Length: 115
Length: 113
Image 1 (cartoon, rainbow over the protein chains, first blue to last red):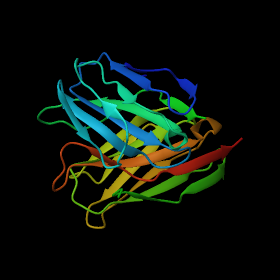
Image 2: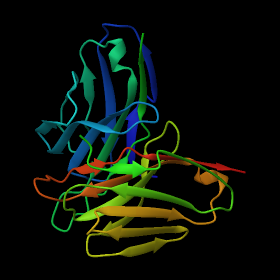
Image 3: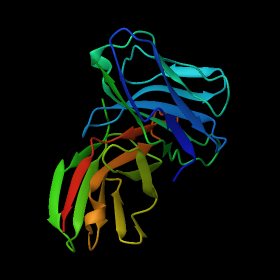
Image 4: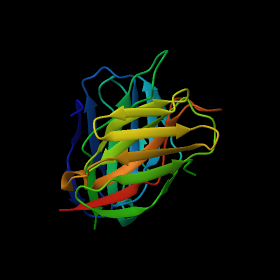
């Protein structure tokens, strides 16, 4: 098991609520990622970061925002949740540097349901 | 759009049989990786093959890579019910790549006891 954690594991909330999904890793990895995945479907990269104070949008447009104030912490925030945000959110991390393989280590995921 | 395409999308076999999954990609790569995902969980890295390698083994896993055809296959021998999961290929490297992995659409494997 990788040392990367996500909380909460499951979240059911009402439309319009602000939520933050937490992701932390203890491996000292510089690179971190957020993916959105519907059940049985492919992963879509929505945000990534290559270090503190560095964040980029991914391939899939998302209304969420991220921050990277500390190396080990990469939270994702939805200011106003909608039913279309219902999905599984996966956080991952990998090493940065020469000779890297870009192997990613994933957290267990947060299953979000917006009513 | 995702670079990787996996085939088949779903596979159902009996315990003890071999399972083969295929992955195709479009651009040059540094390496290709296979991941496993149990239902409702995160992905777990299984095996990596570099662009200058043709075959690699790890336990019951065998991966091949054909860079001329831009394709890879994952073979799971003597499958077990516990192998039931989704399997994703992911490519690293290639022109314009900034260190991200490009994931395929996944193959869902069901191993019946």
